[in-house]
Image (cartoon, rainbow, N blue to C red; front, side):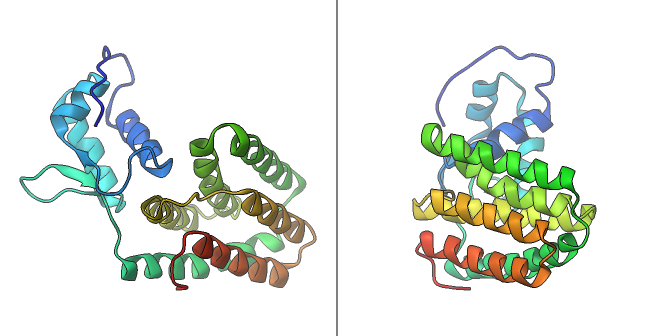
Length: 217
């Protein structure tokens, strides 16, 4: 963990530290296996170790961090079996998202999705870490548009774990192919083609697995 201290400021509670660390993990700035000593994290963000512990506990509950008793936390390194399970669950959950969205998405929702993909395309050329994060958040946004907080929460969880897995392979979560596939999903939803959207999502997730050089789930 880089030693970069700064002064504490309002808002430097567990939520902010959690968000900063999660962004670094998802954006592949912290690779799987990276150690997260409480003292070093506290010094970097200028907060107490109590605040750091609360943030690490939340990351551990989401499977992004391993935190054995009486040992330093570290970024999780999912096994091959765990990786297959995560992507298998994504197929089920995101297929359900497509089914729900096809007959309920409105023009405002379509506009939000297109704006998000535009940001992905811009980031792809200028800020790869940001593109990785945005690629995952596209899937979370799809789930949020279903109006089901529970489904959105589950999708957010598996998307975060997927990004961690992809970070471990050293391959990017996002590419121009992903942007094109996202646009295809939007077009199918806009037409109300639930079957086509489900099939396109399944193919898209298989392509993500392929780009990460993982065996198909």
